[in-house]
Length: 252
Ligand code: IPE
Ligand code: IPE
Ligand code: MG
Image (cartoon, rainbow, N blue to C red):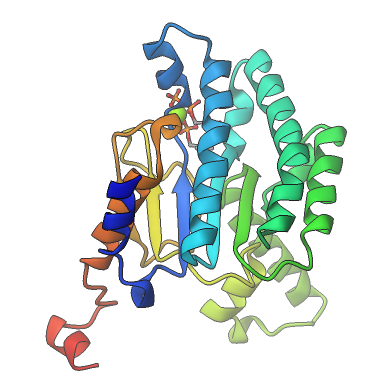
């Protein structure tokens, strides 16, 4: 703990990423290494969610986006899907009072109407209960995939064009960004993936165009504040050039 506080001082509070997105991977392997059920890994993963949300809020991150269940995850064994759905519902019900107390506002990204109705209800209750919160914005991606999101946006734009509400010639990057479920949210500055895999698995493909990527072998249940701090410190050492030269960036 003392060590963590010392290392926190390495962090420049004026250069924090505004938006951190995380692909929370490795729950199954965490359980397997302990000869336990995959469900135990997911349950343990929830503790990391709580911890990282709390820490993000404490240090002043404005947006935290968590990939909790992908469109592709529906293809897992039914028992695991059922377990995950129950866990999501149960967790949101348990955590909502704490989220309110910490001024955290919940947003949902994804095709949530595919979730069991009781889980949807718990999620909407959580969104409603935290709607007035002004601290950390917590985006939970559930039944989310980027291609689903972009496809839906394309369909909406096409329908608007057919109705004559927009002129196709006027569609620009801003129009597209405004059609995505992240319309009110800045793009992620930092994308973290735990669990050792170095891929993006259909997550925020449009939004991560210029994000800094950070991959760690640490499995999600083991992802603690200290590993998170490693990622944040690493992020602050990078120079984001957005296509410009290093000299230009330094002059700005
Ligand atoms: C991430 O952990 C959680 C979800 C995708 C829901 P995994 O369940 O993918 O864990 P591994 O990759 O099998 O270790
Ligand atoms: C990505 O993890 C999805 C989430 C973390 C929710 P997966 O474990 O499903 O990713 P792949 O299939 O290994 O790429
Ligand atoms: Mg995985």
